[in-house]
Structure formats: structure tokens, C-alpha cells
Image 1 (cartoon, chains in turn purple, cyan, blue, orange):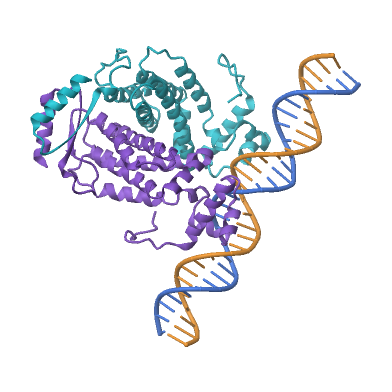
Image 2 (cartoon, rainbow over the protein chains, first blue to last red):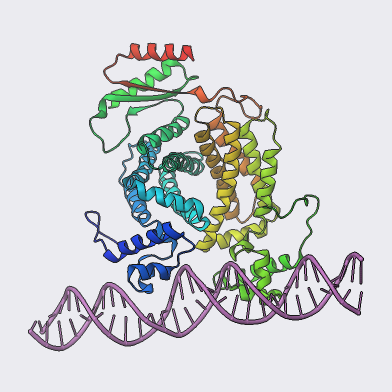
Length: 242
Length: 242
DNA sequence: CCTCGTGCGGCACTCGGTGCCGGAATTTTC
DNA sequence: GAAAATTCCGGCACCGAGTGCCGCACGAGG
């Protein structure tokens, strides 16, 4: 809440926190989550029990040590968006942030996935985290569609759809053990959502906000039922703007 | 799971369970959820502490005493569906079941809503319940769209959209204090989802027997430098083949 | 009358989580 | 460079949720 005000350049890196995470996962993986007590963790880490709860509000939090930061990044990313951006596209890019974070440490992500699949308590905790992401996306869409008819309904449903598509790709990748390129999978899934949500015609320069150089490629998504002249007109006007 | 095999006609009605629910809500409403201990509840109900956990696995469960039954109803409802039914429509009807259950006891639902809004622990518990509904809907859609391209992705996203629309209407109604007709609101919201998901099919008619739709969305990727007439020719020939 | 199954209450215990305090380390200030 | 203040850490004591176990009362059946 009121913890870190300025630390985008480099994290102070508290050593004790990392050692607690390491000790916790070592024990979780070798004897299971519920079979490991907090006392076991702090004994292995060589610190006091009280210090554990200084860095992690609960035992579950040690399993998801980076989500708080990622949620922060997403909030800032959405806050830094311009009014000219397409809201749905922006939200999809925000979801990509989460996937990127998982992809940074594949082995860690897969290990955690195994844990969350087996332990019911961790699953519900993960649900609460996912809910915060969805709420963040929904809040952004709500403000962008404030003047629109059924704006909040549209925002809620769209946020849920984006989260579902992201999780679909994420889980597929995690189930495969971290093989393949997860970013491509999530792009496919999100493009599917975007296609069903801007059905008349969506055209623009390809994804990845940070990636330069691909200005040349144009992606067009439409439906069979849309008349060809409408597609052409939409594409031409979109190209004209760029 | 393996508890009740046959009790659709009439519930055996354990008296102690109901008295525990009544005592719990009385205390929750007058001094708050976290300020009420299980000992307080069983003292007011005049039963032993051990009996509380016989009927409710956790303190949170007493707040949602009917969801287990409702989830059971939904599962049976979906299992009893015919292959001729439109999957999306069927799932929307299943979501209506949940709304109906809330609408049966408006005051109770509103009181519970107030609690879940304030207490974080109850919110996450509710999330886990909602997740089970979403999973049930998703499993049904997955089997119905097993042969379809991107069937599981489509199922996951559609289930999430239906749940989001349902929750949107539900929360609006709960926030209003239980005024108005909740079923109408949820119908509107679900129709919105159905419109964005089966746009070709008109509302009401069973339509679209699971054949069309998957290949409805067309994705075209090309370059800026490609002449428009080549793009059009390519798209038209590609559509002709399909 | 005895027995067996069941539902309930009453412990005693584990473990997650918190408040509080004292001490050590580190930084600030003169 | 020493004293003072702040921060960080460990060690309690404590609360409350949840569980295992045992004993007891009650009703059904031989």
C-alpha cells in the first residue's frame, strides 16, 4: 500500500527475504506445502520466526513473491496509456506483462504450478491474485468506456475474457513443463479474444508495444460475414493514420 | 462428494445446522465477522464447539451454506442437456440458476453481500466458489466443443464471460439492496454476452447447430507494401476454399 | 437386558498469525 | 569519535481456527 514510493530502477534486494523463499521452496518441494510449517522454514533459513511474517503476511505469500510487483507494473502500465490507444489492445498488452513475468523463471513457475495444483489453499490464494489483475484491467476499461452504453458490463466481461485467455495459454505452457514460447501462445489466445470483441474490423501494426522494427507487418481480423468493401475501407483508413 | 445420493424431493433439514447459521449471522451482523469467534457462535446456539465443524468445514462455510447445493443443481442441469441445445444458451440458463438462488432470499443475500464486501477472507472464499461455477460451465463447454478448433480456449473464455456477466448483474442488484427484478438484469447481461459470441444467430431462436462460428473469424497478416488488390484476392480465394 | 451404531460434547493439541518488548546493528548528530 | 536515535531482528506470550480422540447418551434391534 504505502510501502515503496520510488524503486523502479533497482530493487534494494533484502537478503533475508530471498533466503526465506529459497528455504520455503526447498521444503515445499521435498515434503509438500502442508507438511512444512513456518517453523521449519525459519529454522532452515536460520532466522527468527517473527521475521518470516515481517516479509510475508501469510504462509501462502511466500509462494507468490513477485506478484505484488507485477501488479504494480500493470497498474503503472495502464496509467501511462494514451487516450488514442485501443483499450482492448492495451489491456491485452497488460496481460502480456504477466506472462512475461512467468516466462522469466520457467523452472520456478513450473514448480509453483505443481504446488498450486495439489494444494487447495494455494489455489484459492492464486484466485485472489488473479482477481486483483482482473479488477485492475476492469477498472481501466471502465474508465475508458465510461461514456459508452453498458460500459461497465462491457468492461467486466472483456476483462474476464482477457484474463481467461491469458490463463489458458499460461496453463498450457506450465502443463508442458515450460517448453516452447509462451509469449506466442498468449498472443494467439489474446488475438482470439480481440477478434471476437472488435468483430467489424480490427487493423493495426502488430502487437508488442516495446518491440520496434515490425512496423511493416499488418494484422487484419474480421469475419466472413463482413462485406469485403468494409474490410478494405477499414484497412485503408487504418493504414492512412499510421 | 459421496454424501447425499437421493434427496432432491425434500431436505432432511438438520435443525442444528440451521440454528448455527442463524446464530452465526446474528453475531456477524451485530459485531462483525472477524470479531466473532466460533466459540461465540456455538455458545449462542447452545451446542458444542465440535459440532460446528461437523456441519461446516470452516468458519467461512457458514456464510455460504447453500452454494454447495446450488453447484450440485448446476452440474445436474448441464448433465441433463441434450446435444441439440445451443451450448452457450444452455450455459446462460445454468447461470440463471445461481441468480435464482440469490433471489430466493433477498435480505439474506444482501446481508451476506455486505459481509463479503468488508471482509477480505470472505471475498477470497467467494472467489473460490465462483471459480467452481466457472469450472463447471467450462467443463461442459469443453466437452460440447471438443471437436472444434480452439475448443478449450473458446470454452474457457466463454465460461469466464458468462460468469462475469452474471456477477455484473448480481452485484448491481445486491448493491441496490435487493430492489427490482434481478432475473431481468441478468437476462440483459447474458444476452449481451450471447450477442458478442453468436452475433450471426438471432436472439431467441435456437440457431447455429454448432457447425458454424469457429471459422467465422478470419485473420489476415500481410505487409504494408503489399498492394490492396493482392490482399483482397488472397482473402477471397482463401474464403472460397473454406 | 444387553448390544451396537450414531450423534454430540469435551478435551488436548497443532499451527498460522499478532502484539509486545528487549537487544543489537546501523545511522545520525553534535 | 562518542552518544543518541532509528531501524532491524529475535523471543516470547497469546489468540483463534481446525483436528483427533475419547466418552457419553440415546434409540433400534436381538
